[in-house]
Amino acid sequence: DNNIGSIELVNSGSVPFENIRVSVFIQNYMDNPTESEGPDVLNPGENAKIDLYALFSENVLEITEATIVSAEITIDYLENGKEKQNTFSDSVRIYDRHAMTWDDTKKAAAFVNYKDPSVIAVGKLLSHLVKSTVNVVDVNLCTAMAVHEALNAFGMEYVIDPTSPFTELSEDAMAIDFIQFPANSLDFKSGDCDDLSILYTSILQSVGIDTAFITVPGHIFIAFALNSDPRQIRKTISEPEDIIEYDGRAWVPVEITMVANPFMQAWKAGANQWNEYDQKGEAEIYPMNESWQIYEPVGWGLKDRVAFIDEDEASSVYLREVERFINREIYSQTDSIKQVMNKRGESARALNRIGSVYARYGKNEEAAEYFDKALELENYYPALVNSGNLLLVNNDLQGAISLYKEAENINPRSAALYLQMSRAYSALGMFSEADESFDKVKQKDPELAERYAFIDMSSSASRASGYSLTDGMIWLDEEE
View 1 (tube, rainbow, N blue to C red):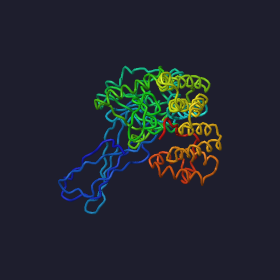
View 2 (spheres, helix red, strand yellow):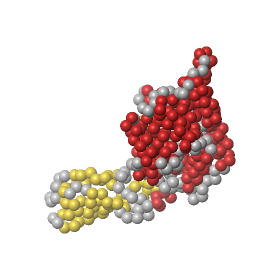
View 3 (cartoon, helix red, strand yellow):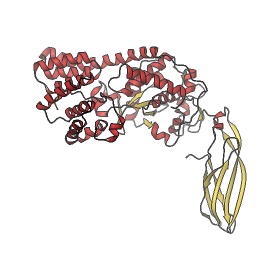
View 4 (tube, rainbow, N blue to C red):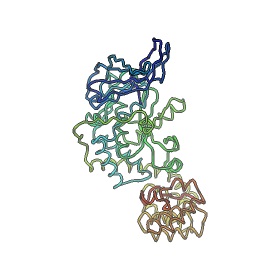
């Protein structure tokens, strides 16, 4: 809890005061007094500082201008065993619902109202869009991409607030800033860096994606957590330096003021800022869930839901950007391999590596061509596993298991192989075989087993939660 102030009690009498309690009540803005415990005993000549707390009603959110109100402060205590009470009033300034000081960046988390109906509607629209169209590499990455592109198509603009620019207010801890709730930003179609950061994180949080604020000198932007393991994602993307590894998770920084630019440009700009200031020790990251432990989100929003773009328009802009991202990644990761093959000739290893890249980015037909070429050259174990993965993706479960068993004869030491076998068996309802396969994963690579515990069908939690057959699919680049 955060106090609204404090008082100092002084016992100027000749007998001790006992069982001291102090309460605060502000008429019209509190339903009941809020009590603070004082010292059990305050002896003559002693003093004690007591923090004051106030549990406000929703009426406080209707304040639109700073208001000075009267606070009634009551002190109850025992003197010589008799109950005593002193009451006095003091004035308190209550600022409007948009007011905030930047003495603690975590305070901004209170404005991240991810339960606002307008925010939920946008989040559900875009989350459904991603899952029903193209979802490659990481579902959180694709969802954030869809959010960014949809906000751009919606006409969202970055506008510096001339009366309260973040660059100035962030240097003055007690200056009052005007912060928009996410519904305000959707309604206005504009906001400064803190407003857009709050809007972006609210939408992502509404669909269960963890977010964070990032601050560098004079600026705030955001990051979101990926669903993938940091080590896996660093092997998957062509520019792993654009990923932040924090608290065992992979985070993508986004310069949200570039909302009018493509997502990939905003991602790159955010990564550049993080890398520059992190090296100087001047970059900070504030995960939302941690900030909410201190400053819970405030449930305020507009009465009417803000109209957003429709699914067709959202789909168009998202697919355009995700295709650009896929093409960039495939080219970046395969061009050098193809150049080497042109000089040295084809090899099963090189062909399989290219096929793995295509598979990770959802280009299954192209991936199958390269895996088949690799297997024509030799019975290459990674290409067998990857070909089985493609059959798994296409729901040919028996065919996938057949190829996995063939791969097992070549390399029975692979934990990744048994992980994929466990997926296929569990999808067929062959839970005993799935458990047996996952037990081998635990024996051969306990860390891998822990990362993919959601596949372990011996766990009642895993059986109850369910998961997509392709969640965290492992594509083998090379022999293990």
